[in-house]
Amino acid sequence: MGKLHFYWITLPIIIFHQAVLANNCIPRHYGKSSFVCVCNATYCDSAPIVGDLAAGQATLITSTRADARFRSTIVNASPLYLTHYTADEIFIDASVQYQKIMGFGGAFTDASGINIAKLSVLAQQNLLKSYFSTDGIEYGLGRVPIGGSDFSTRAYTYDDFPGDDSLSNFSLAREDLFFKIPYISWAQSLSSKPIKLFASPWSAPAWMKSNGKLYGKGYLLQEYYQVWADYFIRFFEEYKTHNLTFFAVSPQNEPMDGNIPDFPFNCMGWTAGKNFHSNLRLETKGFASIKIMVMDDQRILLPKWAETVLAHPEAKKYVAGVAVHWYGDLLSPPIALTSFHEKFPNHFILATEACEGDKPWQKAVSLGSWERLESYAHNIIEDLNHWVTGWVDWNLVLDEKGGPNWSGNFVDSPIIINNILDEFYKQPMYYGMGHFSKYIPEDSVRIGVTVIDGSDLFGTAFLRPDGKRTIVILNR
Ligand SMILES: *[C@@H]1O[C@H](CO)[C@@H](O)[C@H](O)[C@H]1NC(C)=O
Ligand SMILES: *[C@@H]1O[C@H](CO)[C@@H](O)[C@H](O)[C@H]1NC(C)=O
Ligand SMILES: *[C@@H]1O[C@H](CO)[C@@H](O)[C@H](O)[C@H]1NC(C)=O
Ligand SMILES: CC(=O)N[C@H]1CO[C@H](CO)[C@@H](O)[C@@H]1O
Image (tube, rainbow, N blue to C red):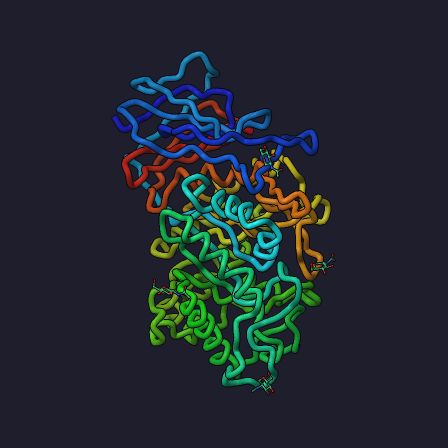
């Protein structure tokens, strides 16, 4: 009882569910690695939907380097026992329970919106459905930069008027009005559930900072702590007038960046000891439900950063969790996540940013790269197996160069557009994200899983709110 037992088959990722037939991928090969799926205004592949399951019945949903994208196979067997494959065995034990899942998603950056806007309206719709609808991979989380980031075509904030201490000239940018808000609202209308949004700023206005610039080494001047906090409130108020509300905020994207001399794009430096969180006073402004996440930076800073913040009684009162980025993960083992969890079991961990192609020796965009799917899936499984409650990708959509980006920091994305042909390409990474985002719904609970003799297999298992169990296995 409580154990599901089956033999491994030679497929990279499987998930148990009943599925209905989905539109097929139209493959296109760019290199030797694997392929992208091509979508346009009139055609896009879809992801199999979860249906009812009889006792002992399961569905395998498979993506492979060679040919499959979300290929589904119904398996009827009780107990589930798939013979004639290889010797690896996987045991799930639902009596061992870990963290509850918040969800998976991506970021509504300026660059994402600028790219989406270049497609025809029907292609735009297919793209947003691919991420947010039940035909697609049903993202439930969305990150929204407060003002500009490197993935903007200019460096800006919502109040670039030196000395405007009362924020009387605060206003959302055309990027919000044309490239963020319309697509967030549209995504929401295509989704069967509320999309949970969270926000982070890259920099305060230059005039509030020690270096008078949006980038490079610089800090918020002490006299502007409250003005900068009020700026957050103004942002939430403006988005609320567009019917968009937030479930969480991080006070700063990558606070370490602004401690680095000549850092090339929007940033602002903080140390863990600066207690800005209490200035936010979200509860007095009608935004009490917005959770504050600290750090929003590489996990190598854990658990020390969190210990320093949470040692401050005032900060501890306001902070709900920590946000982690993946860029330094090769240098910092995931045990840092577990040690944070063990010290602060009531504070959640959310992975809030990741992308491929960011290293100087890497190609920014690598169309069809299977290695990048493996890299995503491996990192997600590793995070989930170390108490992380969800995983949020960086730009939802980039162009074939990996931009636009005002500072030349080009990277990859699960969806790449070709506006000349009015097409977009769903990378292997998109399917990698989907194996998690679609089949591990919010409030699923991670359960025990053991892989026997499976040195190439890496997996994670969940009990869903509907009582079904999902297991995702990566075979590298
Ligand atoms: C859109 O894609 C479908 C499926 O590949 C194809 O049949 C159709 O010709 C494409 N439309 C355009 C305008 O390229
Ligand atoms: C607000 O902006 C206007 C120009 O749009 C400028 O004339 C005025 O000085 C600004 N106010 C402050 C307080 O910066
Ligand atoms: C916000 O939602 C309300 C109620 O559903 C609606 O009346 C209003 O038009 C919406 N406003 C915007 C800006 O979408
Ligand atoms: C270095 C580089 O190519 N930067 C580009 C970043 O994006 C902006 C906006 O699209 C371009 O104007 C820059 O040329």
